[in-house]
Image (cartoon, rainbow, N blue to C red):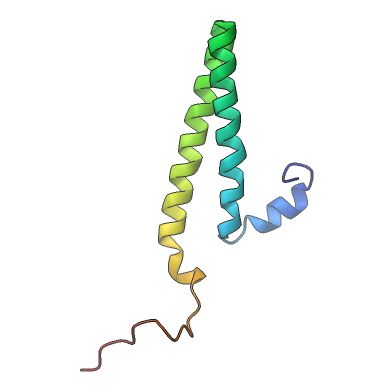
Length: 89
């Protein structure tokens, strides 16, 4: 779905969204499948593919963790009745 709509993808990448996490899960599953394939085939190309996908999966997940941590305030509602009010001095 994400690959088939490049204009929607470009538009969605302008602002951070929690939906970006949807890219990490298929990538991680693909890396795991490549690892199983590399174990069965035992060829250098399969091992290189496994390594590249694993590194890409880790990099994407770490980047998403950082972006999520930095943008959490933008994602939370500002009128939350359970949020702590600022201390009055």
